[in-house]
Amino acid sequence: MSDPSLALAIPLYDEEGNVERVTRELLDTFRTAGVPLTLLLVDNGSRDGTRSIVQRLERDEAEVTGVYLDKNAGYGGGILAGMSQADAEVVGYMWGDAQVGAEDVIRIYRRLVVDGADLSKARRVQRNDGWQRMLVTKVYNTATLWLFHVTSSDANGCPKMFRREAWNQLAPQSVDWFLDPEIMIGAAKLGLKKAEVDVLSRPRVAGKSKVGTGTVLEFLVNLTREKLRG
Image 1 (tube, rainbow, N blue to C red):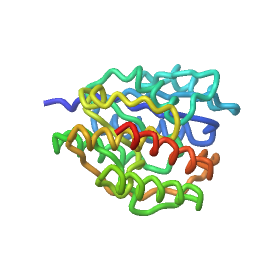
Image 2 (cartoon, helix red, strand yellow):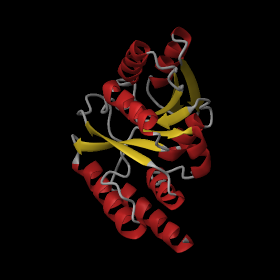
Image 3 (cartoon, rainbow, N blue to C red):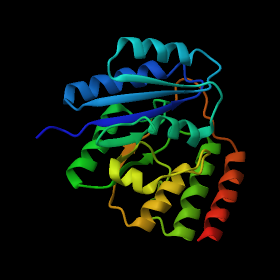
Image 4 (cartoon, one colour):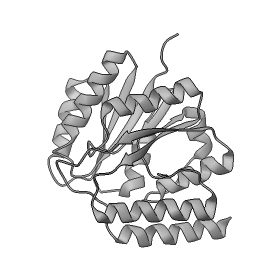
């Protein structure tokens, strides 16, 4: 029985130093494993040379499709733009900062398939982020666990992969940093079967994290709104 196809959206905002490495690692790993792969590289309004690299990769590699946004659509907006074009049995997204290796990406895919899960995701057990991103993650995980009983120690860990039917059920809408908690809260409410894979987060070697202290305030506002909505 052949492996189910995977369409993976990768949002890119000023990631000219990472996009080639991320793409090549994924293509090599999934080709070797014989897993049908489509990479949806989303240029999320980049101001550097990201777009030209994506265009070249799209020209040269049959598995690559470029998605081009002239204005930055936000964290969630970039992901949703790519996911709207994901046409495969398994769909998912990951970051374009090269902090999760392709060998871990395929482990997350395999876990979804073998376990018959609806959602499979990374759980970062070793972090190489700055204090701002660590703070955001701590707030995310503590608040979602406390308020919504999301049983994950890394609610915003990526990659995240879904059976297509599960993604359609979730139908997330957040165009900002609340997208990951929205998905995890939705999965808990729907009773979706979840799998997590421990990964070691690699240090970022190019580009800059887009997470700032304002992300915490944005998240708390969204979380309060979600709780009031019930």
